[in-house]
Image 1 (cartoon, rainbow, N blue to C red):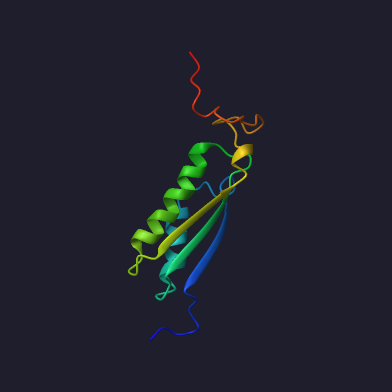
Image 2: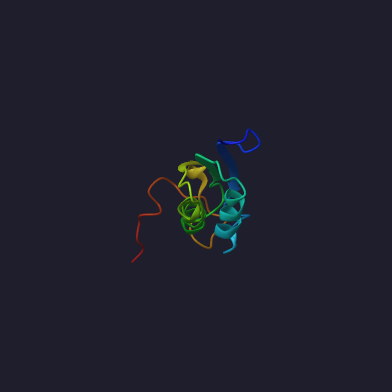
Amino acid sequence: EPSSFFPKVVVENLNAHERKDDDLRFDLAWMLQRNPCVKKFSVSIDCENVCLEEVEKAEAAARYAVDFHANRPTLELVKYGEDKMVLSGQHQQVCTPGCLSDSNP
């Protein structure tokens, strides 16, 4: 029977700009492994001033952590600040809606 010491929901808030290192997926997997009873992993990603690639890396890290866990907890991904994302390599220029899909000839 699960102990009340281990919460069934684990919440993690990520700033994709600050956590763009490749070890993020191992950090999240390790964090979940410490809780054998987790049923849901809720991750909030702050997308402000980051590019799409950084956000996708954070999402992939969260998915890896869930896939790696024996219980296969439900993953809840919440992104905010998407309207303030930037083009890759340009942290000064804020994207407008649709800019990530536009191609420059």
